[in-house]
Length: 190
Image 1 (cartoon, one colour):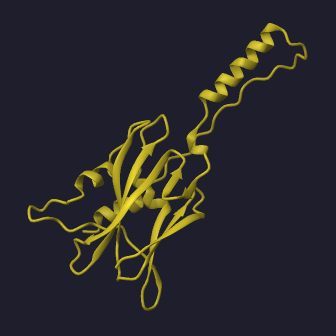
Image 2 (cartoon, helix red, strand yellow):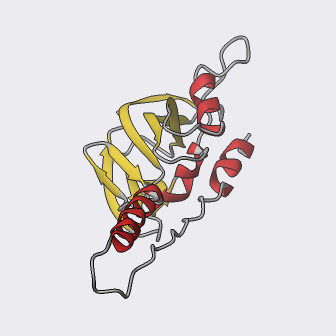
Image 3 (cartoon, helix red, strand yellow):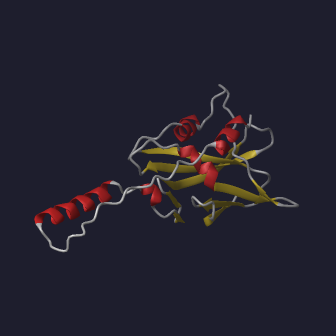
């Protein structure tokens, strides 16, 4: 049943687009032609501003990951599909800041959860919550939202799930596009 977790983990990050620079004039005089070129250059640079180049941050439960922003709204512990295990559920509002469709599940590439066991600080696998009596996931709508292509400038409600090892605290670490840690948050399991 870890197929979904593997899919999350293997999702690739979107490539960072480069944007063109404008033209410049070698003419020192400020005739109308050079003024028009300067205006065109400023407009071109503004249109080509790429949000994927924005600085990635994590602060106050908001993970700004360039094209996507994840605002974590609450957390809870639910039973796992794996007998005897539980899942940390992080609810999030996901906003697509770009002009192209985005894959919210890419968060699993740059957000990782850790929990101490008797011998290690173990990285947790993505989790799957237990199904109800009708074999439905109680979080199906939010899980689907994480796997759908989010349209430009839209927001959806999703979940980030990690299967727990025990009842110790969980530290969730947030990385930037270079996979360097930019912040963390600790969640109580009990």
